[in-house]
Length: 591
Image 1 (cartoon, one colour):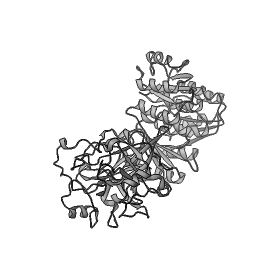
Image 2 (image 1 turned 90 degrees about the horizontal axis):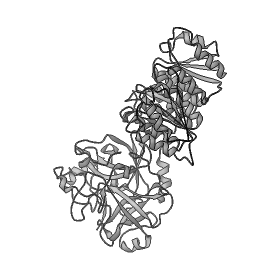
Image 3 (image 1 turned 60 degrees about the horizontal axis):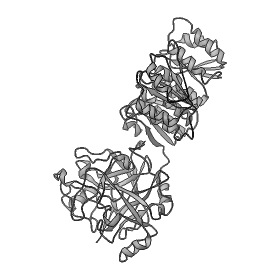
Image 4 (image 1 turned 180 degrees about the horizontal axis):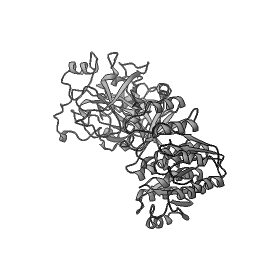
C-alpha cells in the first residue's frame, strides 16, 4: 500500500489528538499506526532509517527535524525531516504540512537544527513564521510534494553543524546518495530512534521505477527513486521531508526530498523522492533577500582563529606568503598584527604562550607558508613555541619590542613602511582597537597602539607616524579612554579626528560609519567584552570587507541593527561560539 513517509507525534493517542495538535481535521490516508508512547524504552530505539547507522550531525549538517510545538519534548514531537537551504528557509515535503487540503498553522511547528539527538527532556526553540507549499502540489498523487518553511528568525550557518545545502540543478542520473533522519526502523512495527542515522542508497532509473509503480502515480518529471542493495536500505515513516543528498567534487547537493513509497525497504518498490532539480528555481524564488547568518567558531580561541583562517584562505594553491602568530592569552600584540597580516596576504593564528597547539601546527602545514612572523617577545610567545614554529616554514622571525607599544610600531613596519592614514587606539583595552581593525583594512591603514593617559607627550608615537608620512589620523575611543592630551599631541603630526560614542559599542558604530558609509556585503559581529575569538577576525573583515561591530553576548543593540539594515548586507558573520555570541545574537534579537 502506498504511504507517505510522515510520522505522527509519539505522544498523540488518537486521530482527534493529532488533528487538534496541528489544527487539521483529518489524518493522512494510509498513515502508519501511532507509535508507542514516550514510555518506550531505549532498547526499542535502534536502529534508524531501514539499514542505517548512527551518525553525528556533521555527517548531514543540513538535516533538521520538524517537531510539533505542543509536544513535551523533541523526541516525542518529531514527525518529519527537512533540509537547511538558507539561514531563513527549510525545504521539506508538502505532505508534512498539508492534510486534506489544509495547510498547518506555522505556530504548530518547531524546527530542531544542529543536533543529531532528539531530546527526551527539552523542546526546540526555532519557530516557523510561514509555510509555502508548491502551488502544483497534488495531495492524492504526491506530485510536486515540496514546501518551504520560513523561520521566524535566522539560524547561524556553521560548518559541520548547521550548513545550508546547495540545490541539485540538473536531472540526476544513477549515482550513490545519502539519506538521513529519525524515521521508523522497522518494516513490521514502530521503532523510532533518538539518534539520527544515515545510510547510502543508489538512485534508480526512471524506467525501472515506473515499472515497479505501474499501478501507482510515479511521475518521472518530478520524482526520482532510490534504494539500498537488495532492498535492505530505505527511508520510512518519520523521514518524510528529509534529504537525499549527492556528492559532486567534494560538495553535497540536495537532490531529493523524501516523499512516499510502497512500504519501506519492500521489494520491488524503491523509495520515491521529490526531484529537487525540477523545483530548484521555485525554491530559489522563496529564499528571502534578508542577510544570511554564518558563524566562525571552534572549541577554543585557537581553533576559532583556525576557522577564520580557513574561511579567508580556503585553498592555498602552493603556499601562503606569510602567517603571523601571536599570543592568544592576551590581546595587545594581536590587535596591531591583524591589519599587518591582511596587508601581507596571510592569516593571523593564535598560540598558547608556552606551547603550540597541535591544531595550529596542522593549520600551518595546510597553509604551507613561505614565512612565519612571531609577534611579541618571549613573555608573549616563548622560545619553546618559536622553536616549534621554526620547523614549519623556510623562514621565521620574531618582531617584538620592550612593551606592547613598541611591538605595535615594529609589527606595523612589516607591512606599512609608509601610510597616508593611521588608526590610533588605547593599548590598555581591546574593544576599540578590535573595531578599528576592520575599518583600518578598508583604508589600507595600520592600527597603532598608544597609552591612553601618558604623563608626557607620546614622542615615540608622534615620531613614528611622522616617519610613516601619515596625513590623516583617527583616534578611536572617547576621552575616557584616550585623553585629549594625546589627541592634541597627535594633531601636531597630521589632522586628527576622534571617533567615539557613549560606550565601546557606540564607538564601534561610529568607527564603522567612517569606514563603511554606504553598502557592504558583509557584517561581522563579536563580543564587546571578550577579546579572544575576534582577534583573527580583522583579517577576514579585510579580505571580505565589512564593518566589525561589538555587541553584548545575548542581543544586538538597536543602533547596530539600524546600521546593518542601512548597509544592505547579504551576510552577517559571527566571530566566536555560542558562549560569547549567543543564538539570540544569531537571531538578530534587539537589546
